[in-house]
Amino acid sequence: MPEIDGHTQLVGVMGWPVEHSLSPPMHNAAFAALGLNWCYMPFPVWPGKVEAAVQGLVALGFRGANVTVPHKQAVMSPLDNVASNAQALGAVNTIVIDRAGDANGPTGSAVTLAGYNTDDVGFIEALVRGGFVFNGRANGGHTAVVVGAGGAARAVVFGLLKAGVARVTVLNRTLERAKALVKALYPFAQTSASLRALPLVPETLIESSRAADLLVNATSVGMWPHVDASIWPNGVALPAHLHVFDLVYNPLETKLLRQVREAGAHAIDGLEMLVRQGGIAFALWTGQEPPLDVMRTACAQRLKP
Ligand code: ATR
Image 1: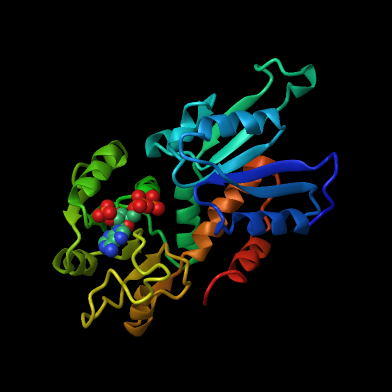
Image 2 (image 1 turned 30 degrees about the vertical axis):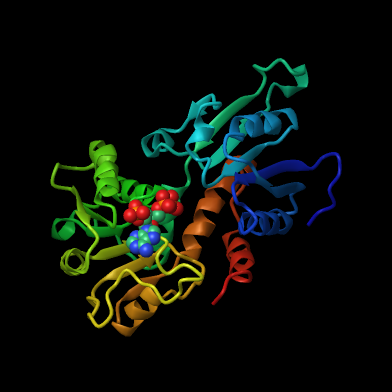
Protein backbone atom coordinates (compact mmCIF):
# COMPACT_ATOMS: atom_id res chain seq x y z
CA MET A 1 0.00 0.00 0.00
CA PRO A 2 1.41 3.45 -0.84
CA GLU A 3 2.26 5.71 2.06
CA ILE A 4 -0.78 7.68 3.17
CA ASP A 5 -0.08 11.40 2.99
CA GLY A 6 -1.85 14.67 2.30
CA HIS A 7 -2.46 13.70 -1.34
CA THR A 8 -4.11 10.35 -0.66
CA GLN A 9 -7.54 9.98 -2.31
CA LEU A 10 -10.12 8.23 -0.17
CA VAL A 11 -12.84 5.69 -0.97
CA GLY A 12 -14.46 2.92 1.09
CA VAL A 13 -17.42 0.65 1.60
CA MET A 14 -20.42 1.32 3.82
CA GLY A 15 -22.32 -1.70 5.11
CA TRP A 16 -23.58 -3.43 8.23
CA PRO A 17 -21.83 -5.71 8.93
CA VAL A 18 -18.81 -5.01 6.76
CA GLU A 19 -15.87 -6.68 8.47
CA HIS A 20 -15.82 -9.68 6.10
CA SER A 21 -15.86 -7.56 2.92
CA LEU A 22 -13.22 -8.46 0.35
CA SER A 23 -13.50 -5.05 -1.30
CA PRO A 24 -10.78 -3.31 0.83
CA PRO A 25 -8.02 -5.80 -0.05
CA MET A 26 -9.26 -6.03 -3.66
CA HIS A 27 -9.21 -2.27 -4.30
CA ASN A 28 -6.09 -1.53 -2.27
CA ALA A 29 -4.22 -4.20 -4.28
CA ALA A 30 -5.46 -2.54 -7.47
CA PHE A 31 -4.35 0.94 -6.35
CA ALA A 32 -0.92 -0.42 -5.39
CA ALA A 33 -0.55 -2.23 -8.73
CA LEU A 34 -1.18 0.99 -10.66
CA GLY A 35 0.88 3.15 -8.26
CA LEU A 36 -2.18 5.24 -7.37
CA ASN A 37 -2.10 7.16 -4.10
CA TRP A 38 -5.60 6.02 -3.14
CA CYS A 39 -6.86 4.17 -0.08
CA TYR A 40 -10.04 2.08 0.43
CA MET A 41 -11.47 1.50 3.91
CA PRO A 42 -14.39 -0.46 5.43
CA PHE A 43 -17.05 1.54 7.28
CA PRO A 44 -19.58 -0.19 9.52
CA VAL A 45 -22.55 2.16 9.16
CA TRP A 46 -25.53 1.57 11.42
CA PRO A 47 -28.91 1.15 9.80
CA GLY A 48 -30.55 4.60 9.94
CA LYS A 49 -27.21 6.38 9.74
CA VAL A 50 -26.53 6.08 6.02
CA GLU A 51 -27.47 9.68 5.10
CA ALA A 52 -25.22 11.00 7.87
CA ALA A 53 -22.45 8.72 6.59
CA VAL A 54 -22.82 10.11 3.04
CA GLN A 55 -22.63 13.67 4.38
CA GLY A 56 -19.51 12.57 6.26
CA LEU A 57 -17.91 11.30 3.05
CA VAL A 58 -18.58 14.66 1.39
CA ALA A 59 -17.28 16.65 4.35
CA LEU A 60 -14.13 14.53 4.63
CA GLY A 61 -13.18 14.92 0.98
CA PHE A 62 -13.86 11.33 -0.16
CA ARG A 63 -13.94 10.57 -3.90
CA GLY A 64 -16.65 7.93 -3.59
CA ALA A 65 -17.75 4.73 -1.93
CA ASN A 66 -19.25 1.33 -2.38
CA VAL A 67 -22.50 0.59 -0.62
CA THR A 68 -23.53 -2.86 0.49
CA VAL A 69 -26.26 -4.60 2.48
CA PRO A 70 -28.46 -3.20 4.04
CA HIS A 71 -27.91 0.33 2.68
CA LYS A 72 -28.23 -0.01 -1.11
CA GLN A 73 -31.76 1.41 -1.16
CA ALA A 74 -31.57 3.98 1.64
CA VAL A 75 -28.44 5.54 0.19
CA MET A 76 -30.31 6.74 -2.90
CA SER A 77 -32.17 9.68 -1.33
CA PRO A 78 -29.16 11.97 -0.60
CA LEU A 79 -27.72 11.52 -4.13
CA ASP A 80 -27.97 14.17 -6.87
CA ASN A 81 -28.11 11.73 -9.82
CA VAL A 82 -28.88 8.02 -10.00
CA ALA A 83 -28.01 5.98 -13.11
CA SER A 84 -30.98 4.49 -14.95
CA ASN A 85 -30.08 0.87 -14.20
CA ALA A 86 -29.71 1.70 -10.49
CA GLN A 87 -33.15 3.33 -10.60
CA ALA A 88 -34.61 0.23 -12.23
CA LEU A 89 -32.96 -1.99 -9.63
CA GLY A 90 -33.90 0.33 -6.76
CA ALA A 91 -30.35 -0.05 -5.47
CA VAL A 92 -27.05 1.83 -5.62
CA ASN A 93 -23.79 0.02 -4.86
CA THR A 94 -21.33 2.71 -5.97
CA ILE A 95 -21.20 6.46 -5.30
CA VAL A 96 -18.95 8.83 -7.21
CA ILE A 97 -18.33 12.19 -5.56
CA ASP A 98 -17.45 14.82 -8.13
CA ARG A 99 -15.45 17.47 -6.32
CA ALA A 100 -14.71 19.66 -9.35
CA GLY A 101 -15.85 22.82 -7.59
CA ASP A 102 -14.28 21.99 -4.23
CA ALA A 103 -11.59 24.64 -4.53
CA ASN A 104 -14.31 27.26 -4.07
CA GLY A 105 -14.86 26.09 -0.51
CA PRO A 106 -17.82 24.45 1.22
CA THR A 107 -20.58 25.99 -0.88
CA GLY A 108 -22.58 22.78 -0.97
CA SER A 109 -23.27 23.10 -4.68
CA ALA A 110 -19.61 22.48 -5.47
CA VAL A 111 -19.92 18.74 -4.92
CA THR A 112 -22.09 16.34 -6.93
CA LEU A 113 -23.05 12.86 -5.76
CA ALA A 114 -23.82 10.27 -8.45
CA GLY A 115 -25.15 6.77 -7.76
CA TYR A 116 -24.47 3.69 -9.89
CA ASN A 117 -25.15 -0.01 -9.78
CA THR A 118 -22.32 -2.18 -11.11
CA ASP A 119 -23.85 -5.57 -10.23
CA ASP A 120 -25.86 -6.22 -13.42
CA VAL A 121 -23.02 -5.48 -15.84
CA GLY A 122 -20.55 -7.18 -13.47
CA PHE A 123 -22.67 -10.33 -13.62
CA ILE A 124 -22.86 -10.32 -17.43
CA GLU A 125 -19.10 -9.72 -17.78
CA ALA A 126 -18.44 -12.61 -15.38
CA LEU A 127 -20.88 -14.86 -17.24
CA VAL A 128 -19.11 -14.22 -20.54
CA ARG A 129 -15.67 -14.73 -19.00
CA GLY A 130 -17.00 -17.98 -17.53
CA GLY A 131 -17.61 -19.30 -21.04
CA PHE A 132 -21.27 -18.47 -21.72
CA VAL A 133 -21.65 -17.37 -25.33
CA PHE A 134 -24.54 -15.05 -26.18
CA ASN A 135 -25.76 -16.13 -29.59
CA GLY A 136 -28.05 -13.23 -30.33
CA ARG A 137 -31.45 -14.42 -31.46
CA ALA A 138 -30.22 -17.70 -32.93
CA ASN A 139 -32.32 -20.70 -31.88
CA GLY A 140 -35.01 -18.37 -30.57
CA GLY A 141 -32.72 -16.81 -27.96
CA HIS A 142 -31.53 -17.98 -24.55
CA THR A 143 -33.58 -19.33 -21.68
CA ALA A 144 -32.41 -18.73 -18.12
CA VAL A 145 -33.52 -19.89 -14.68
CA VAL A 146 -32.66 -17.59 -11.78
CA VAL A 147 -33.12 -18.93 -8.25
CA GLY A 148 -33.62 -16.23 -5.63
CA ALA A 149 -35.49 -12.94 -5.41
CA GLY A 150 -33.28 -10.62 -3.34
CA GLY A 151 -31.10 -7.78 -4.55
CA ALA A 152 -28.57 -10.08 -6.20
CA ALA A 153 -31.27 -11.93 -8.15
CA ARG A 154 -32.77 -8.63 -9.27
CA ALA A 155 -29.43 -7.47 -10.72
CA VAL A 156 -28.96 -10.83 -12.46
CA VAL A 157 -32.44 -10.84 -14.03
CA PHE A 158 -32.08 -7.21 -15.14
CA GLY A 159 -28.66 -7.96 -16.66
CA LEU A 160 -30.00 -10.99 -18.53
CA LEU A 161 -33.02 -9.09 -19.91
CA LYS A 162 -30.79 -6.20 -21.02
CA ALA A 163 -28.44 -8.71 -22.67
CA GLY A 164 -31.39 -9.93 -24.75
CA VAL A 165 -32.12 -13.25 -23.05
CA ALA A 166 -35.50 -14.30 -24.38
CA ARG A 167 -37.00 -16.10 -21.37
CA VAL A 168 -36.21 -15.86 -17.66
CA THR A 169 -37.90 -17.97 -14.99
CA VAL A 170 -37.48 -16.72 -11.42
CA LEU A 171 -37.83 -19.37 -8.72
CA ASN A 172 -37.96 -18.45 -5.06
CA ARG A 173 -38.78 -20.11 -1.75
CA THR A 174 -41.11 -17.19 -1.01
CA LEU A 175 -43.19 -16.94 -4.19
CA GLU A 176 -44.45 -13.44 -3.38
CA ARG A 177 -40.89 -12.04 -3.57
CA ALA A 178 -40.35 -13.68 -6.98
CA LYS A 179 -43.63 -12.17 -8.19
CA ALA A 180 -42.60 -8.73 -6.94
CA LEU A 181 -39.25 -9.02 -8.75
CA VAL A 182 -40.98 -10.05 -11.99
CA LYS A 183 -43.47 -7.18 -11.69
CA ALA A 184 -40.69 -4.64 -11.15
CA LEU A 185 -38.67 -5.84 -14.15
CA TYR A 186 -41.54 -6.44 -16.61
CA PRO A 187 -40.81 -3.15 -18.39
CA PHE A 188 -37.42 -4.55 -19.46
CA ALA A 189 -38.71 -7.89 -20.76
CA GLN A 190 -39.04 -8.43 -24.51
CA THR A 191 -42.58 -9.81 -24.25
CA SER A 192 -45.02 -10.66 -21.48
CA ALA A 193 -43.98 -14.31 -21.92
CA SER A 194 -40.31 -13.46 -21.26
CA LEU A 195 -40.50 -13.34 -17.50
CA ARG A 196 -42.34 -15.56 -15.02
CA ALA A 197 -42.24 -16.38 -11.31
CA LEU A 198 -42.62 -19.87 -9.82
CA PRO A 199 -42.21 -21.35 -6.34
CA LEU A 200 -38.85 -23.00 -5.67
CA VAL A 201 -39.57 -26.73 -5.32
CA PRO A 202 -37.63 -29.63 -6.87
CA GLU A 203 -40.20 -30.13 -9.64
CA THR A 204 -40.16 -26.53 -10.90
CA LEU A 205 -36.37 -26.34 -10.68
CA ILE A 206 -35.77 -29.60 -12.55
CA GLU A 207 -38.46 -28.94 -15.15
CA SER A 208 -37.44 -25.37 -15.95
CA SER A 209 -33.71 -26.22 -15.95
CA ARG A 210 -34.21 -28.94 -18.57
CA ALA A 211 -35.58 -26.32 -20.96
CA ALA A 212 -32.91 -23.70 -20.12
CA ASP A 213 -29.32 -23.05 -21.12
CA LEU A 214 -28.38 -21.10 -17.99
CA LEU A 215 -29.11 -21.69 -14.28
CA VAL A 216 -28.08 -19.03 -11.74
CA ASN A 217 -28.09 -19.49 -7.98
CA ALA A 218 -28.71 -16.02 -6.55
CA THR A 219 -29.67 -17.31 -3.09
CA SER A 220 -27.39 -17.73 -0.11
CA VAL A 221 -27.93 -21.51 -0.16
CA GLY A 222 -24.56 -23.28 0.08
CA MET A 223 -22.78 -20.33 1.67
CA TRP A 224 -20.42 -21.02 4.57
CA PRO A 225 -21.14 -22.43 7.16
CA HIS A 226 -24.00 -24.30 5.41
CA VAL A 227 -21.63 -25.85 2.88
CA ASP A 228 -23.62 -29.10 2.54
CA ALA A 229 -26.71 -27.31 1.21
CA SER A 230 -27.56 -26.95 -2.47
CA ILE A 231 -30.56 -25.72 -4.44
CA TRP A 232 -30.26 -28.82 -6.65
CA PRO A 233 -31.89 -31.95 -5.17
CA ASN A 234 -29.71 -34.95 -4.30
CA GLY A 235 -29.85 -37.92 -6.62
CA VAL A 236 -31.22 -36.02 -9.63
CA ALA A 237 -28.92 -35.66 -12.63
CA LEU A 238 -28.27 -32.07 -13.56
CA PRO A 239 -28.69 -31.47 -17.32
CA ALA A 240 -25.19 -31.70 -18.84
CA HIS A 241 -25.87 -28.97 -21.40
CA LEU A 242 -26.40 -26.32 -18.68
CA HIS A 243 -24.14 -23.45 -17.72
CA VAL A 244 -24.56 -23.03 -13.94
CA PHE A 245 -23.44 -19.80 -12.28
CA ASP A 246 -23.33 -19.85 -8.47
CA LEU A 247 -23.10 -16.33 -7.04
CA VAL A 248 -21.93 -17.78 -3.72
CA TYR A 249 -18.14 -17.37 -3.45
CA ASN A 250 -17.61 -18.48 0.12
CA PRO A 251 -16.67 -21.30 -0.40
CA LEU A 252 -15.60 -21.03 -4.04
CA GLU A 253 -16.44 -24.67 -4.73
CA THR A 254 -20.02 -24.93 -3.46
CA LYS A 255 -21.95 -28.18 -3.28
CA LEU A 256 -23.98 -26.99 -6.29
CA LEU A 257 -20.82 -26.52 -8.36
CA ARG A 258 -19.61 -30.00 -7.34
CA GLN A 259 -22.94 -31.41 -8.58
CA VAL A 260 -22.49 -29.43 -11.81
CA ARG A 261 -18.98 -30.79 -12.41
CA GLU A 262 -20.07 -34.35 -11.60
CA ALA A 263 -22.83 -34.01 -14.22
CA GLY A 264 -20.34 -32.75 -16.80
CA ALA A 265 -22.13 -29.39 -17.01
CA HIS A 266 -20.38 -26.02 -17.12
CA ALA A 267 -19.66 -24.40 -13.71
CA ILE A 268 -19.04 -20.68 -13.06
CA ASP A 269 -18.16 -19.58 -9.52
CA GLY A 270 -19.03 -16.31 -7.78
CA LEU A 271 -15.54 -14.81 -7.55
CA GLU A 272 -15.62 -13.23 -11.00
CA MET A 273 -18.80 -11.25 -10.34
CA LEU A 274 -17.23 -9.81 -7.20
CA VAL A 275 -14.16 -8.82 -9.21
CA ARG A 276 -16.10 -7.41 -12.18
CA GLN A 277 -18.52 -5.27 -10.18
CA GLY A 278 -15.49 -3.96 -8.29
CA GLY A 279 -13.63 -3.31 -11.53
CA ILE A 280 -16.45 -1.16 -12.88
CA ALA A 281 -16.51 0.87 -9.64
CA PHE A 282 -12.71 1.25 -9.79
CA ALA A 283 -12.96 2.66 -13.31
CA LEU A 284 -15.75 5.06 -12.30
CA TRP A 285 -13.63 6.52 -9.47
CA THR A 286 -10.17 6.58 -11.03
CA GLY A 287 -10.90 6.78 -14.76
CA GLN A 288 -8.36 3.97 -15.18
CA GLU A 289 -8.64 0.45 -16.54
CA PRO A 290 -9.01 -1.89 -13.51
CA PRO A 291 -6.18 -4.43 -13.06
CA LEU A 292 -8.60 -7.38 -12.91
CA ASP A 293 -5.91 -10.05 -12.50
CA VAL A 294 -4.54 -8.30 -9.42
CA MET A 295 -8.05 -7.86 -8.00
CA ARG A 296 -8.93 -11.50 -8.65
CA THR A 297 -5.77 -12.74 -6.93
CA ALA A 298 -6.31 -10.47 -3.92
CA CYS A 299 -9.81 -11.95 -3.41
CA ALA A 300 -8.90 -15.56 -4.18
CA GLN A 301 -6.10 -15.51 -1.59
CA ARG A 302 -8.68 -14.72 1.08
CA LEU A 303 -11.35 -17.22 0.05
CA LYS A 304 -11.91 -20.78 1.15
CA PRO A 305 -11.19 -23.18 -1.75
P1 ATR B 1 -29.43 -10.50 -1.49
O1 ATR B 1 -29.91 -9.09 -1.48
O2 ATR B 1 -27.96 -10.66 -1.25
O3 ATR B 1 -29.88 -11.23 -2.71
P2 ATR B 1 -31.57 -11.42 0.28
O4 ATR B 1 -32.45 -10.30 -0.12
O5 ATR B 1 -31.45 -11.76 1.73
O6 ATR B 1 -30.07 -11.21 -0.19
O7 ATR B 1 -32.02 -12.70 -0.54
C1 ATR B 1 -31.59 -13.97 -0.22
C2 ATR B 1 -32.22 -14.98 -1.18
O8 ATR B 1 -31.82 -16.29 -0.77
C3 ATR B 1 -33.73 -14.97 -1.15
O9 ATR B 1 -34.20 -15.29 -2.43
C4 ATR B 1 -34.05 -16.09 -0.16
O10 ATR B 1 -35.32 -16.66 -0.30
P3 ATR B 1 -36.60 -16.01 0.44
O11 ATR B 1 -36.98 -14.81 -0.38
O12 ATR B 1 -37.64 -17.07 0.42
O13 ATR B 1 -36.14 -15.66 1.83
C5 ATR B 1 -33.00 -17.07 -0.54
N1 ATR B 1 -32.73 -18.08 0.51
C6 ATR B 1 -32.02 -17.90 1.64
N2 ATR B 1 -31.97 -19.06 2.34
C7 ATR B 1 -32.67 -19.98 1.63
C8 ATR B 1 -32.99 -21.37 1.81
N3 ATR B 1 -32.54 -22.04 2.87
N4 ATR B 1 -33.70 -21.98 0.85
C9 ATR B 1 -34.13 -21.33 -0.24
N5 ATR B 1 -33.87 -20.01 -0.48
C10 ATR B 1 -33.16 -19.35 0.44
